[in-house]
Image 1 (cartoon, helix red, strand yellow):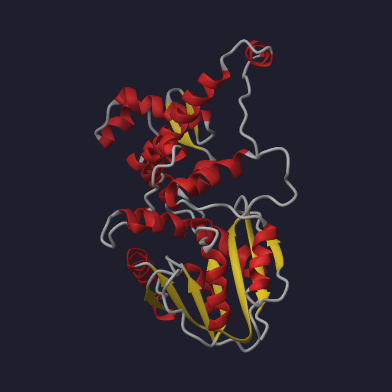
Image 2 (cartoon, one colour; image 1 turned 60 degrees about the vertical axis):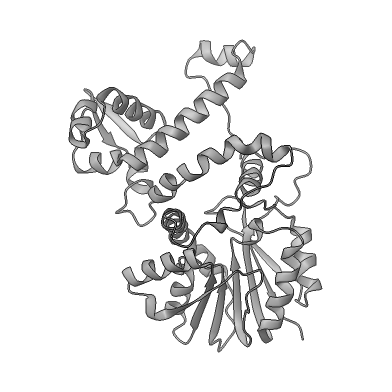
Length: 349
């Protein structure tokens, strides 16, 4: 994926192609403004309110006790992004907005969008990180920090979106009875897996702050009886033994390179003979050696800023699995989440 600027008029397209427009200035200002407008609109509830009643900027501002001129600018920004239409100064939601930004939608990511406000200041630390300053891992926040609510709820939204595709690709061993979900946080995937395979019982291992939110989320959707939580750090916690299936989703890109093979060896020791291990993560794009991808660069920088993590290559992941005692893995590319791959391997004993 590449993010590009396109002119709306012939004159703008010519100016960009010449080039006559200072592209860096436009990229910085436009990218920051539109991202900020989307986050602010989510936090202020503009889309939810327009879903109830289409309105002018002034009417919407009055209903939410906000500045009318700021609301108009935010609504215009949402219109440029394709989330609103305007007719005679009244704004209405597009199909895109109803699908992705309304809490009532089964695939809404509005909480994820809102929670990215927590990442905003991290980007200003990038020059210091490049100079070698220490990175503060966002997973080290206190268990009662309100951050966990925002973070895990956003991850829960993404899990609702990607779980059907992941579930279809996942191989569950015959007569499997136990599954360990490492860093399973919200517990949504583990619960859905147990619903699909009623004989399964799941344990989710995650940090205390994450586990607390996960328990609450599952209780609200009536799935808390399907999942048991174990609090701990996956890098050092006792994983137990005798599992038929172990999942490790969206964790390895938060780890240091030397921590990943150590975790895989511990996973192997926790599986029964012939048990299966499934790793889902953001990896470097296979076969890409020359042209960088904007989404890949962005993810790499983000994980470095949030946890000093790195994106590993498919070759590295395969080598770590085989060195830990697993058969050659099979991999599946997930289409609903950019850059995600599912690797599955059988434990050899």
